[in-house]
Amino acid sequence: MSFTITRERDEDLDLLQITDFTTGIQVRILPQAGALLHEFSIPLGNRRIQVIDNYNNLADLKKNLTSSYKSAKLSPFVCRISEGKYKFEGSSFEFPDKFNDGSSIHGILSDKPFTILEKKVLEDQAFILLEYHYKKENHAYPFEYLIQVKYTLKKAGRLYLQTTVKNLSSGRIPMADGWHPYFSLEGKVNDWLLSFHSIKNLAFNENLIPTGEIIETDTFYSPRLIGNEKFDHCFLLEPDPDFPAATLENPANGLRLSFFPDMSYPYLQIYTPDNRNTIAIENLSSAPDSFNNGIGLLLLEPGDSQSFTVLYQLEFR
Image 1: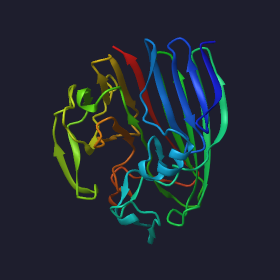
Image 2: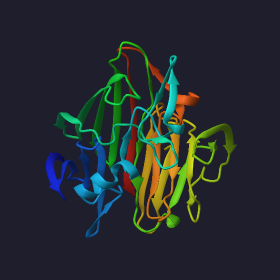
Image 3: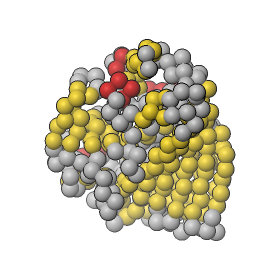
């Protein structure tokens, strides 16, 4: 078969690995830490290019996961909640954990251990299905729900990330979903080409909370060098099934990563760290602070489910 699924232990991390022997592409997943994507790599000559900025070892993961959130599953909210506070159906809630700006960030599942439900290898693909049952552990989110994350690697470097949430509470619940990966294509961000299918982004205040204003810009509507551009923005995607929502390419080695979210992810958060080694490109189902502003917020009825899917395609031009 072209695909295999194996268990790997690397730097004290227990990983699940999907390998496509046709292309040499490898995907590694870390179930114990929010089912995060630990590796998406491709061989080039005598080296392997790892496009995911990950954690070096278990000590690094434990120390930095809940501050950097690299590759974290964002659930049940994305990005920031202003002051960690929100109101829902007449009740007020406040998350105990706050970032240094006073906001609560990136959901509450990033460090949760997911259970492996299924692993399957087929002729043209392989997938791993993981699950976490959230049982109201955080008093600021007193709602029960089930979340499943499915990684499917198909031929031609196509990696599908599908998340499905199901409301197990007796009443409706507020919900948003997203991912928080940092990508590296070798070298510096300044030398890569970026494009995204959007001409609008949300205006933020100093704490990266949407103000309600929309800013129009088409600077990266077509591929261009990132250069010294600094990003910490949330863009409104224009859906078009014939084009990727975003592309990232390194002209020096010809590596290109394309993003194809489905209609459940209409927002794209982009962030460039100061070291300029990586770029975060985050598919989101809602805007930041959606528990307060309602922008893109999903209200999930009892027993109902919702799925969110994004395809990452890794290839050489």
